[in-house]
Each structure stands twice: as C-alpha cells, then as structure tokens.
Length: 169
Image (tube, rainbow, N blue to C red; front, side):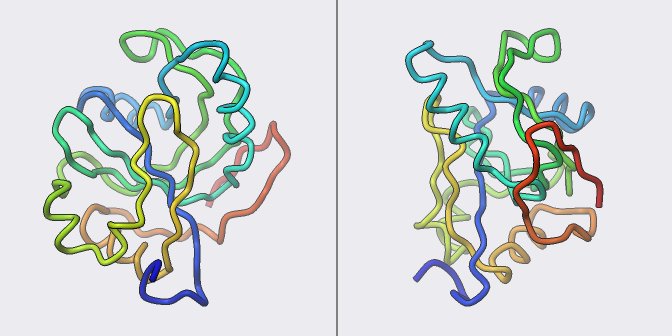
C-alpha cells in the first residue's frame, strides 16, 4: 500500500520551494528552511521539526513549476530561529542538508503521479503543514534517486540526534 516493500518502510519529507532560484541557493549553501508563518502555528511546526531525524530522506517540490527536484539528506536538526539574508524574505527553522542532485533533473507532478507507485501517499505540504513525513520504502527512495539524483547516497538510516547535532556521511 505505501510502497513496494513495507518491511523496509522509511519516511520521506517533501519541502516546498517558491522558485528554482530558491532551490539553487539552498543547494549552494547546503541549507534549507521553511516559510515563516503566524506565531500561533510556530510552536507546533517547531515541535514537528524536532521529530525529523538526522539523515532523513527528503525532496523539494517547486510550487511555481509544479516539479519535484533535488533529493537530499538532512544533516542537522532544525533550529528554532529565523533565517534571513539567504533567500528573498525571511524563513524559519533552518537546517543543514546534503543535496543528492540539482535542478537539472526534475519530474513534473503529473508524470510523478503516473510513474511513482508511492505518489498517492506523498504529503505535499502547504505553507503551514511542513515537517510531516510520508511513508516510502527503500525501493521507492531508489526510484526517486534514479529520477532526480546525481550523487550516490551513502548515508546510513535516519536516526534521532541531539538538537545541536550535525552529521556527515
């Protein structure tokens, strides 16, 4: 139901981006963050972000182009602070990433829906419901890397780490 092999279930985080330029900056800086929101939702978003383990699998969905691009692994726990000066505008809960591709490889949402058996189970976030994972299998992750990746994924399985932790492969 959730992918090709439930015994090897994993989680995939999908993060929205407003533009390809925003994605390219994130890749260059090895950093990602989410859009700011009202203070009333900030605490819940931060608490969800702390449940995202180091080495989590993730992919970016460009909302302006309606494409999936740039798979990556999470290298640090999101910080409870604002991030400005990197992108146009202010973002929140920045964390370190290790990109496994770039924007030259992408798949549009319609093609992903036709080709990715796990697509119907993906949570594609809006501005306020980020840090919610979708179940995928190891084989599903291999499909994402085949379609979008350009770097070998040598990372271990995701693990919970101390809030100040940063990891390398």
